[in-house]
Amino acid sequence: MTGATGVVFWVVLALVLVAVETFTVAFIGIYLAAGALCAAVVAAFDGALWLQLVVFAVISAGTLYLTRPALRSRFVNAPLVPSNVPALVGRRGVVVVAIPAGTGGRGQVRIGTEDWSARSRDESPVEAGVTVEVVSIEGVAVIVRPVE
Image 1 (cartoon, rainbow, N blue to C red):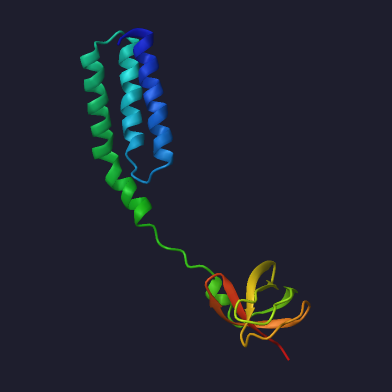
Image 2 (image 1 turned 120 degrees about the horizontal axis):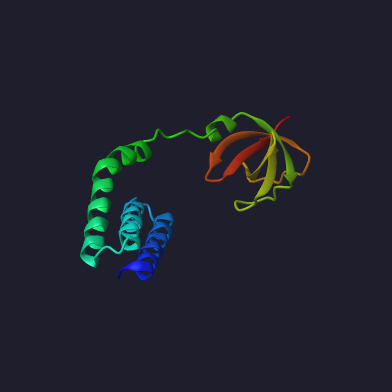
């Protein structure tokens, strides 16, 4: 595979590897794509197939060996950013969708500028427009009680 055919093959392989990389978390496809692009350059200068394969292998392995550990530690060991969900406990909001009675009764509460799925703490109904206080959080729902 030399000339235009080889170039097309290696460039298509590089594009496929980049596409595969976007769907995986292995962080390897990008290195193989770099090797494929370098092999395409060799093919463009009518390099022999064995030389293209050697360039592909050496560039892929070399970039993988030299850069992957540093990049992986940077992305994998990134500090976790805590969410502000625990800060909702104690805040007040207004019921925008009435909370029906019962254990599965869910409505919506606006807290600040965000709408949250909400349940009543004592499973009693809460009408729309009532001011409530968040007493806890269960999953994606805030548990509220009417403010007196």
